[in-house]
Length: 305
Length: 305
Image 1 (cartoon, helix red, strand yellow):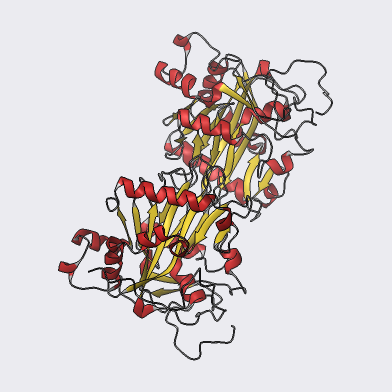
Image 2 (cartoon, rainbow over the protein chains, first blue to last red; image 1 turned 60 degrees about the horizontal axis):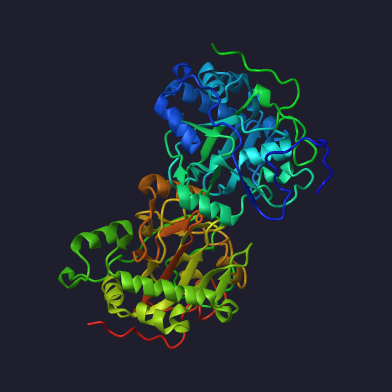
């Protein structure tokens, strides 16, 4: 094990430290607010989020708003200047843009979407705190040669490589193309957010340079996955553009490849509780760049009510 | 272009010879027999096969027969002797067995399935001739790390690399595991059997050594695929074990990767009309090995009625 640059602070979710996989029961709430009368979501949706670890919200944006997002997405993708920035991650084989990070800083339009009170209120309620953006990105899985992305918990990486202390963050993925069963939709394992799978394998230096294309460490073992899938099954986030896939930071998710002619794109915003801001990485590696994990001058988004 | 070792015989389906993709309308019937009263399939199924280029047959084998096939499949996969034979094709990354060719020669059990009169009668009717086995194999797409297989027409390869003269062959894939939307089911483009896409790129020597793992030549171009998918859509062969997926030799098909815990296996038999037996490869390369494309001592399967 590498020397602990974080001192003696206890790590409740150790990963990449043991020689065999370990399961740790979630130590944190899924929904942090208790007063359901003030909730921006219906009771049944809150129950579903707590149980499954995710929700699909279909009617939050209207058609014009979705069309605007699609237009701005295309503009970013077509920009040669953006393509050559560090924030752009390209496909291993083709060199095509796969993700653009920090879209809320690269584009005023996407900043306003990320700060939209309809989204922020939901994040604030579920996390029981003011929130800030830990990470934002635009994901683009092209048609024909879109690659798969293996099962993972985002929190496992954010905790180990970024120093996010507890499970008090969530993601909102806004789909910008139709997602069907064939074009590599997001696959989710319901209920998997209740278990932290401590993964095997030490983090290489500058792991992010390759892990954003293909993750090699921080991936759950076959036996754990088999058991979680047998218990809970798999759900696919198929639906029309504009759907929000809202999911807990520890939910296992992944996607298959895409040989169809239909690309699959989405906007991806990560909201973290202000009280849960990152410290030094629990995996004792150097922090990842600011555009992947916000660390400096963290301020809460404008309170929405 | 390489020297034509086949002499001056006209090639109605040239491929890998031009610098841009060309579409050639199918020059051959889809169903060769005309007397529908003698057909082993219902009228509606025949119409569907003619139009779409494929059929799903769900009730041909009973549960015991399917269980026997599954047991024999497992026996072949577990055999160290089989694993080290040329007939076994392994995954690029993991080294796991992906396909075993010539299963009707390696196993008396699979020989009897391939010669089952219920299958042979259908093949004979559709191809209007006695039939023989051009190729047989067992395909095994493992869970977790099952790779995708890109769109292709089998006939394009059988014609170019094996010397199959005309479109007068069909495949029967017998599924041996559940196939759902998530575990990389076979995807088919209905109606694509009516168009021969002449592919770009010259065949390397001994192409089969890599093409059975990942096909690099003989794959259709993006524009052709886009147009065929926009016209006809995509159908997935999802269903229970024992289903037969019957499809024309020129139908475009492929599959996405499989990150689920459920493997996907099938038996695959290719029936070719005796009058359509292979000649020298139309791509002017050396013929592929006998276990991939039967060439010697071809005899029709025992007449079934």
